Amino acid sequence: MMDYIRSVLSFTFAISVMYMLLDCEIMRKRDRYLLGLYVAIMLVCDGLVLLNLGYAQFMKLYPLLVHLPVFLAFVFISKFKPIKVFFILLTLIAISTSFSLVGLIISSFFDSSREIVNIVCYILYLPTGFIIYKYIRPPFLYMMNNTDKGWFGFCIIPLSYSILIYSIAKYDLDNVIIRPILKDAVLLFILTLSAYFLILRFFKQTREQITLQNEQNLLMTQVAAAQIHFESLEESQEKTMLYRHDMRHHLNLINSYLADNNQEAAQKYITEVEETINCAVVEKYCRNYTVNLILSSYIARAKNEQITVETQINLPQKNVVSDMDLCVIFANALENAISACKGIYGTNDRIIKIVSKVNNNKLYIQITNSFDGTIIFVDDMPISTDTNHGFGTKSIAAIAHKYGGMYSFTAEDRIFKTSIIL
Image: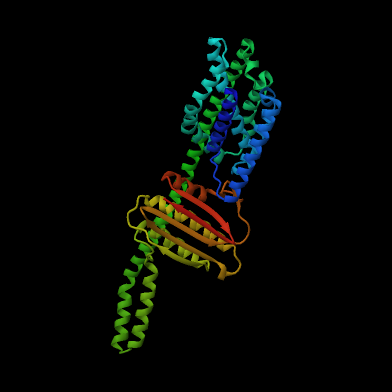
C-alpha cells in the first residue's frame, strides 16, 4: 500500500515541479477542460494497468504509461519547445529517482526496509520543492527564455542516467536493494549530480553574459538617446541665437513699414516672423523636459515622413523611472514605429499613437503603429531580419525587467502594439 501512495505522491510532485519550472499558465477554459479530461483518462488507464498487471509490471511500463503522457501534456500547455520540455522531464526523473536512492542508502542500515525508503521519500518532497522553486527555477527559466541552442547536449546527461537506472532496476525497489546494484546506482547518481552542477554553472555564466550584452545594448541605446537629446537642444539654441541676432533687422524693417503707414505689410511681416520663431520652440508634449525633447525630435521626424501622430501623454516631471530609461523606451519604440510606417505605400495609412499615463503609482506606456508585411515572433519577441537591428525591443524588455515591470509586443490586423507597465 505504501508503494502505491509513494507512486501517487511522486507523480503529484513531478507534475507540480514541471508546472513550476516550465512557468505554465492555461488561460482559456477550453484548454483547462481538455487537460483535465486528458489527465483523467491517463489516470484511469494507469489504474487499470496497475490493478490487472500488478505493481512490478506497472513500474516496468512506467516510462510508457506515465513519462510519455506527461511529456505530451506539457508540450501542449507549455510555451517552450519540445526539447526544453524533454530536458525538464528528464531532470524531474533524475530528482525523483534520487529520493529512492537516498531512502535506499538510509534503509541499508536497517535491514533494507522498503517502509523506510517510502518514509524518506515522503519527507524529501516538500523541502526539495522549495529548493527547486527558490534556487533552481530562476536560472532554468532564464535559460529557457533566452537560449535556444545546446539543449540536445543538455538532454544527453539526464537521458543516459534515466536509461541506466531503468536498466538496473526497472524502477522496482526490490531489484535495487541488492547492495552491489545499489552501489552502481549511487555512483551514477553522483556522476549525474556533478554534471548538473556543471550545467547550472554554465547557466549562470550564460546568464551573466546575456545580462552583460543587454547592458551594453542598453548603454548604446542610452548614448544614442542622449545624442538626440543634445542635438535637439543644440538645434533649438542655435535657432534662438540666430533669431535674436536677426531681431534688430526685423524691427528696423517693421519700423520702416509703419513709417510709410503700410500697416498691412507690417502685420504680414510680423506674422511671418512669428511662424519662423515658433519653429525654433520645442513643442510641449509632457512636463518631463528630457522626455519632451525626445518626443519632439521623433514626432517631427514622423511628420516629415507624412505619418499621422496622435498623442495622449501625461508624464509628471519626476518619476520612479529615470529620465534616461524613459528616453530609451520612447526612442526605441518610436524609431521602430517610424521605420514600420515608412514601409506603407499609402500615406493616409501611416499612423502612430502614443499613450502614456500614471495610475496607482504605475507608469503605463503604449505605442501603436500601422505596418505592412509580416512580423516574426520568437518567444513573444519580434525578430528583425536586418543586420544590427532588433536591439530596440530587447532594450525595452531589459528596462522592464530592471524595474520589475511588464512588457508585451503584439501584431494584429496590421497594427503593432508596444505596451509597458513600470
